[in-house]
Length: 265
Image 1: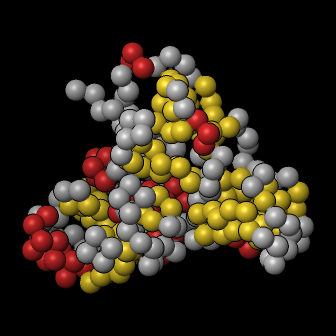
Image 2: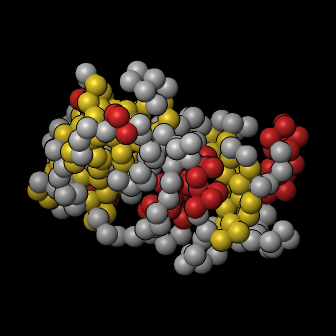
């Protein structure tokens, strides 16, 4: 049976229009007005496959995830020039930090510059502090360092932003920032990311540990970093203690220890 996350009902596919998310954050829903599966950020590019009233069935470019987004969240694609590399930032009405903020933007948002000053970059959403942006193509090299930007972020099922994120969202944000393709959900990540290591292998920074329905970064040989429902936040946790806690709460043992290619520990 096909997975609707990446293979929609063929009868629903009536087009292939390139579009782009123009809101700071939008829920990607399983059905029109249905539950959230993931979230998309400003600048995420998509292909619209079908339109149902005020909703669009689409496929995301970054991970191939399919779902529904309100039509008002989409606009014509623009080539991005910058991406947000701070945990979060504001888009101001003027190139002045005392001017009213128009929008809040999460790490990973992608924007096209209209104009630049020494301290701000003007975009369609407003003026963004230069310190919070890097040019498209600037790639990070340490996924855990990216994930640490989200420390304390509230846990949110299906979340992908600085205002709420889940375990797989944290893994995806860090991987994409380092130029590593990454699917959206933890079960997909377990089958598609990295190399499986034998039991007893020493844990190394930037390894991934998987459970049924959960994933965590190895921050150091004895520490995990993960968005988890135990803390209801992105948190650091002693590795062996986390393994024991997760087993004790009924979620079972570690199902895989994986290592990403081309990433140093």
